Length: 230
Image: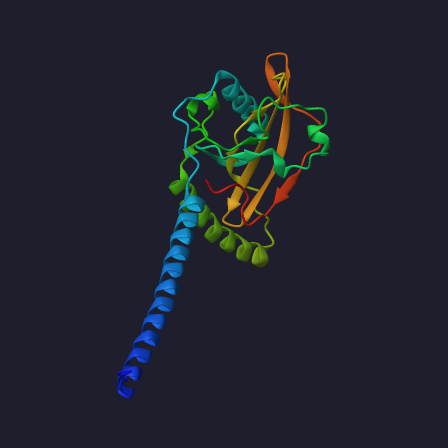
């Protein structure tokens, strides 16, 4: 029986073409995996960069009173501005066995981070405290950094000590317990881009006013990120 023979050069061409196709398949697989990784990274970046939405609803009368009563208590402290936007507050950042939360049960989740509110002049009760937005706040902190360097140099030369200026006060969202007899929030004083101090505070409804309790809670100072970036 007659058998046709494939020329040797044709066999080489077939082998070369098979290897070439296999290599192209490998390249395509790596290309697809690369594009998938880029897509997942972009999606994660978008999620992490998403800002906390500002509530279109005004503060409730109860929330507004908590802020107003607290500002009245802070009236003697030397701060110059109030941030016009609250920041989210996660109670899980406070230890579950913290004395300040002992026996308190909260009406919702331990987190108040789905929305933040704008603070208006209503919470000031006539006090002349400028409300500042994000851009103004950034500029003020930069100016304070420069001023602090100058004051530090001056104090070293003449021995004078500048009075403590707490800077900008920023307040978190308020979390109420189930009875609405207690309210918990975090406050932060921003005295520079890397100068800050704050604490978690528990307030109790005493008569018609909210007053700070003696419940000991966590305090912070000079943190890299003193409040959540919303």
